[in-house]
Image 1 (cartoon, one colour):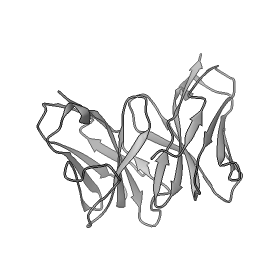
Image 2 (cartoon, chains in turn green, blue):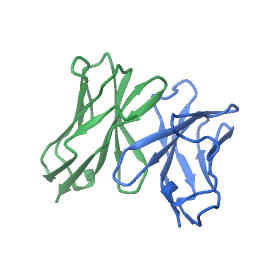
Image 3 (spheres, chains in turn cyan, red):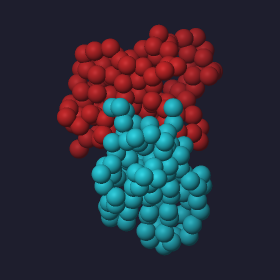
Image 4 (cartoon, one colour):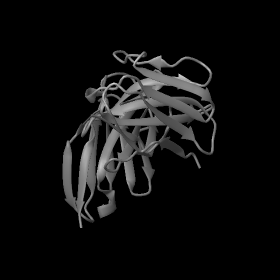
Length: 109
Length: 117
């Protein structure tokens, strides 16, 4: 069953703007991960944040995790046209990953 | 490093035939491999988890006799869709995890698009 629920479902921004995507989940987790998928391709792992962490950075990516609210956010700063893709959060628990429905991000040049 | 390949990248078959999809870890040993299914504009749904040398563990609702999984070596897992029907048309993605990292860090293959006519 799907646990992660991202919002918004679709996001369109201008190149250079920041993109914020949110993910909510329902049960206890060990970690939460964000992935990117370009159209018709496989997944690329972006970042993992453990349940005892609150914030993590990787390049232009910033992820936060609020276990009390069971939510996470992914911020992409200074977006580029190449960031256009679908983004999924995935929660890790019980030795497997459960993916959300995904957010389609379009970055206009 | 940590590259996972899938073959074929796409396949079209007639209803009733069987299709085999290969998933290979190219530069590492994968003790655990996962098979996912993704319908258009939808999320990935885990179908099964396979550990090298043992039977796969299927998720609820996934028919093990229809989706045969073999993980015979530390670098190869196969998914065979038996007696495929149009409703089996989907994007199948595998992932692999290295020994000691289990499910936390999965490396994903590029996916195989199956179209059943």
